Amino acid sequence: MEYWDRLDRFLGRIEKTLLVVLLATMVLMAFSQIVLRNFFETGIAWGDALVRYLVVWVGFIGAALATRESKHIKIDVFSRWLPGIGRNINYVIIHLFSCFICGLLTYAAMKFVRNEYQMGSVAFLDLPIWQFQIVIPAACGLMTLRYALRTLKELLIIIGADSIPKPERD
Image (tube, helix red, strand yellow):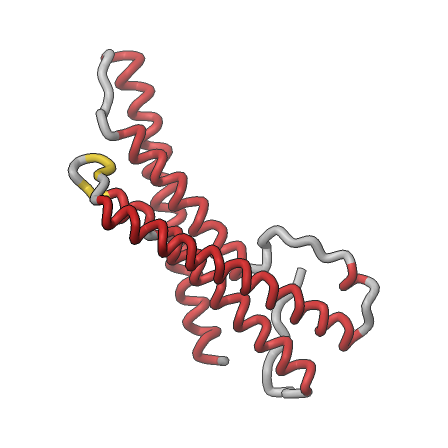
C-alpha cells in the first residue's frame, strides 16, 4: 500500500499541474478569441473547439483529483450515526459501489473512444477526435482504481490489520 500511496501522491501532483496549465490555456484562448473578434474582426478558427476540449479535460482531471482528495460528491447520511465498525462497513459499501459505477463508466468510455478511433473523425487541425477524448476513460479508470484501493484499505481496517493507515475522511 505504501507504494500505491507514493504513486498516488505523484499522480496528484501531475493532475494539479495539468489543471493549472489547462485552465491557463483555456482562459488565454478564450480571452484571445474575444479580443480578436471585438477589435480585429477575426479569430482563431480552431480556438472555440480547443476550449471545448479543454473544458472536458479540466472536468475529468478535476474529478479524478477530487476523488483522490475525498472531495468528490457523496451522499452519506448513515456514517454520522454509525459507531466504529459499522461506519467502516458503511464506507466499504460506499467505496465498492463507487468503484463499480466508475468501472462501468470506464468501460463505456473506452468503447466510446474506440468507436471514435474507428470512425476516424477529426476535431481540428487534422487531429483525430479520439486523442482529445482519451482523458475520459483514463480519468474514470483512475477513479475506479482509487475507489478499489479505498475499499481494500477499509476491509483491512475491519479485519484488524493495524499496519494500514486509516484513509482520510472529511
